[in-house]
Image 1: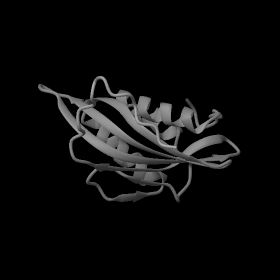
Image 2: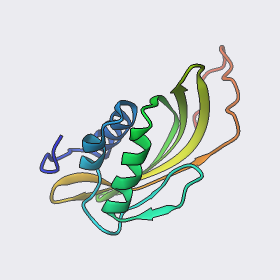
Image 3: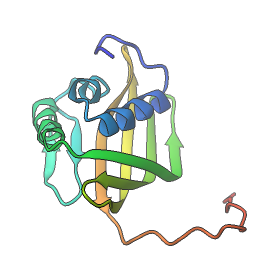
Length: 144
């Protein structure tokens, strides 16, 4: 995916974001971010990073470790406007090492629509307590 590819929806950006994260693909990761010095990223337990260069460097360092991640998205909540979309999700991150490590993370992803389609402008992820097991026979809860 190149910077010139027009992404048709915020969901397309989010799908590409998590694909890049699981594949440790820096070029794909940075192709979904707005090329702007006002973008913001906060990794779990990390500092607030501002600007394309700082965010690219942080992702490069994360991907260099070579740990492969598997991510399952739970409990998506969204706020949608014509030019901005905010997704709040719980990420269940599994790190493949000699033994599996599971890390639940709450993440907020903000996307904006511009001339080149949708792009990410903010990703804020924070660790959360372990997620409770989901009851097998209980229907999903729907809020109205």
